[in-house]
Length: 393
Ligand code: FAD
Ligand code: DHB
Image (cartoon, rainbow, N blue to C red; front, side):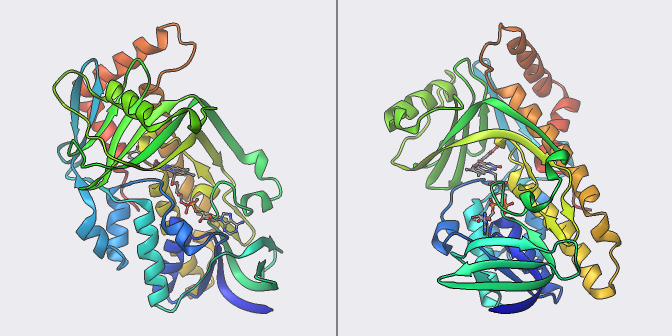
């Protein structure tokens, strides 16, 4: 079976779905191919923090109604170390900017609904997706659906298929453009049916390792613990997770962490990764397909939205005028923001985690940096400005 489509999008994560939605609003037809089921992508628990600009974009694009109703607007975070909490206030340090806590899978649900309501095509549970003839004016996507093989001839292909997708490896020399760091730890994350015991996120620096308190709704708490990179989830029964969370988050000021049934748990590896070649011929990568940040700066989903904002504008110019200036500059335009987020995420990660084998030198640097960050308005403003994210151009 052969078809034609202006833009073929691989991956129905936040990047692929938002791109399809923005293109539809610009009068450009697209199809989204996803190898998982709709139920799976709508329930995959991942990031939870949206910066100001992605929130503004989702609202302006008509997919922000539920986000506006149910998203929790936060005006700061707490850094907890040395036995007490220190609040960083975003609006006063950033000219009024805030963040919104709203689960990634909720963004995904809203975008899928909007595409289907508008008659958009999202094909779930396709297999054997591959991309071809990228240097030609008619690149093709092949896939299987059930027992049938299909081919779509496109003008443009968008690789929005995450870190383990097939699009980045289809760029012949991509490995020559990769910059990467791994970290000697991972995060164990849980979702619990428990009312949040604090109004804002708490990033805790503790001698037993980093811990993060977050939330999803007035009934659901999200929590993370620094663990070893090769940690086995089976070694972490719920009682052990709660004991460790209490120890690392409660610092003797009377604050108590609420417990509840654990709904989901998983281990996330920590990595910094950038493939600076985000385009090849008529293939353009967006989101995790091109870059990964360690989650400490809450930047991952926001970067995916930022890439797609640039790509949708460039494609809009291309289909309207046949000009390729913005498309040609796509990698370069995105990489400025990508490297800012990479630096911030690396910096937050380095400041807040225990590094195995540290002889105490790094701990003293961390403590000095933490004291400076909460003690100096300039340093606090730098954290706040990066955390709420730079405005989209
Ligand atoms: P994805 O959301 O990964 O979407 C890619 C889509 O492509 C997926 O639906 C996938 O199924 C599909 N796909 C893959 N291969 C193929 C194929 N061959 N054919 C068709 N479809 C394919 N960020 C934070 O800020 N905080 C967090 O706590 C956090 N936790 C995370 C936990 C995990 C386990 C992971 C993997 C990421 C986490 N992130 C977190 C990062 C954040 O979730 C990502 O940055 C965000 O998902 C990027 O969106 P995306 O659309 O680019 O990629
Ligand atoms: C969440 C995840 C993060 O990586 C982060 O830095 C803050 C919050 C979350 O899942 O709520």
